[in-house]
Length: 528
Ligand code: HEM
Image (cartoon, rainbow, N blue to C red; front, side):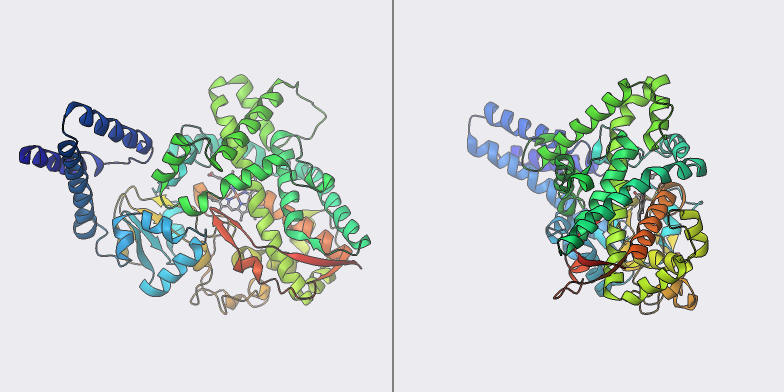
């Protein structure tokens, strides 16, 4: 018996030092879990005494977990970095802390307590230093996307692609859909949705209703992206109701709030329980998107129609079947990447304009002589509008904490050495609110981007669209959308908070699910 117990213990240590300590295991997590369950069951069958088999299993698990804990606390290359003890041992600590999907708040508290470099996981550092964006994504960086991006594994997509060369090749394909010629063509696609948005607001005014602007901006974001990706709008603005697939998508995304800190947990949930609870929503949504892309592939090309983002990807897939597996992952992530961040920023802009109408009046003065359907003219001639958008991107970051990277060699940030193989988190929420980088950082002050530039003390601390080879591909499209929507609505309406509303709940109730989900905003519109 004692020998068997010792063997169980030795196997636990051997599994840790011989296997688990090397490389990544998150994708295999479901198989590891199943493998252990099967091995334990077999042990139980082959050893007559349940007491002996249970003792061996306990001894194995105890020594495996103890070995992991001792290594992580006392011998890990990150052991000298400060951070909560629980976080050093397991990411389950973090999962528990963000069970209400407020990771940006958890990290902000850790920042206040431990400083600019915090060990937030056994192998993870959260870095609040303003140089971090350039260090992990700048031209000299060798960092890759971290384990989190295996979310869709084995599906392929540009956003989740972790191999540098594969990502670069796919990004070249995508770039064809974002040339300046394409962007000009997209304007004709965006404008009808702004008209539909106005119709919704006009209907609210006629009925003397307050507008649910959160819903309206989400509908706008998803309708336009539906058109850009499937050549088919979700039609929510026109129908005045949520589309079931968008509801499924948003419900499924909510799982990323609590589970994002532990990618292995996500793998287990998605692979072992695909039909359980909101996970089923994810798979139904994926199946729907795949169906849309298949239908679209069958349609003959319509030469008179304005090409959209997916047009270029589909053209490539028609001649090269190797591109096929990319299409469904890319379509889903383009919908998510393109609609939610734009909606979040628009909600932030209109929350601030409704709260302090003088911002809207300054924009109104600027747009008097400008064509509000021409984003190029707006960009050139309306610096205050640009400043309002820039400040909204800072105060309402669309990716508050998401975007983890992994160092492939030692990286130095602000004089601190970050070891090779570390997962690095760069939380925009906190970095965009650094006192040493922005004067009065928690206030919405567009003048810091126009007129009072000295209020931006360190430009490196601002990267709302990311930077370098992993930066946002749709940033120019997003900027055009935000310019057009803001200018058109400011030109047509006065707006204010309804009685009893302050707009505070937009940030107070914001959830962090990789992309931000702001709290509810209601605005009272009147025709000018
Ligand atoms: C205000 C609006 C937007 C903001 C703030 C924003 C921000 C970002 C950020 C920070 C990233 C880097 C994510 C990461 O590190 O994983 C990103 C990536 C990306 N964004 Fe956006 N985005 C916006 C709108 C859009 C739009 C309209 C599209 C259109 C399709 C888009 C498409 C993408 C794509 C494809 C990527 C992945 C790029 C890559 O991995 O190479 N985004 N975005």
